[in-house]
Image (cartoon, rainbow over all chains, first blue to last red):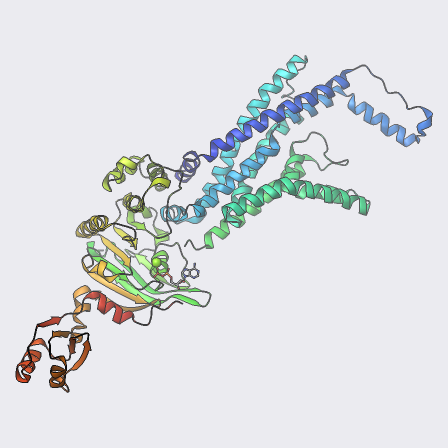
Length: 295
Length: 304
Ligand SMILES: Nc1ncnc2c1ncn2[C@@H]1O[C@H](COP(=O)(O)OP(=O)(O)O)[C@@H](O)[C@H]1O
Ligand SMILES: [Mg+2]
């Protein structure tokens, strides 16, 4: 407990936390606005009185294609499904950048000790290194949860106003929506842990920050594109599903009420994979820290 | 356990290999409480590595180090047992000195008010709320001492604390350490300059190449070499005197000055009188610590 208090003071007594806090809030506000516009469009479409019109005969659709087109149409006009999908998106707004910032916070919590040569003071005060690293893991996820509360407050308020202005309930009571919000919190907490683990692995601060940011921003696209191409090549969507192994894809999967692929990995696969990453990186980080010479 | 054993530091068979480099090689020595012990050796001798091993920051290849009979990592509240100031140790540049200390207090379970008391003790109160980035070297050393004093420890371990201090700061540090030892605590201070230790240390431990060269009270070590005593003579007839002394002593000539080893000043004076040589200067030179130190570690200080 003393150690977590000490680690929280380390965050509070420097500029990072509020710089990151502002960054996360700005991105959240932007993405809430975007998702509200998109959701507005989808809800208007869904609530229109349109009925399915079979395409004219020149399209020459097979009966299966026709059935699929009708199924898609009905999904898009299933108002409760559209509502909860939009709500989950809105209430987890800003996740993409939020998770990046939170993991960078974890990275910095560790690499600062080497960059500013405070590791000596830290380990002199607490020679039981496992305790120190556990405190860092706990602190990073705690700080991450605070970020989650902040972003969820913004999107919660904006989203509730939006839904009530459309004459719907806030949707927060719907299980898939509640689940998405909770899973988003879990994702935040776990990304804090991933950050600490990565910070231990790459102790050079600039190197670690660049690696994490690039792995997160570029890596996500590279993995998704590679998985898509591979799935085309092997004519199997198994490969594409496998991209959920990548942590940022896994955290997207966790919060979606909707499949992000045609045949979706369920949300709990994403959650399990991310928990796995958290455990592995947390453990590796602890073991390395126990062994490492502080010179 | 008696009071004097309380903060005693015992290093036994301590060894650290970095690849092929034996930074510390089977080193054993003991540091008594109530005294200041100087830990001496040329640069690269292995002082920092040894101190870091005592403090559990570097894992020894073999051997042990204990403080008051316990390993550092076994102390439930190490800050209350040992205070340390080490090289390559600093505070976050964007953090105030006071916050740096408060963070340590929080981790050590000490009241946060100890931070202000420690700052007062080292005279850093006016700079307490300034960021570490703007601290001078002397202020950084003072902050280091404040952090070492936080837990009112029984032992102090300092790695080259005089580096970067001005003469006034060095005197201040010396007084502080003497006072600390006077209270019955243990003080272990490393340095690569013996002259710094002459005024400060009661005991010295000298290492070179990671190995122990000599340890003991300062006087014993200096007197142990007193046969190397020499006499300095200035005379207009240097050659004549050198001839007169030939066979009785070793004489070297250095821009008109004769350096005589093997006999004392009275014997040199008598020889001069018999040879009819006028003397302008006749001094018996006792070796100072620095000379002893250089002799002891000569040729062992090479880059490894
Ligand atoms: N982390 C390290 N990796 C490799 N070699 C090291 C490391 N730390 C110290 N050394 C080597 O060990 C020897 C002793 O270094 P050190 O303990 O710093 O000496 P001192 O403090 O007496 O100047 C030197 O040769 C140094 O180059
Ligand atoms: Mg050194």
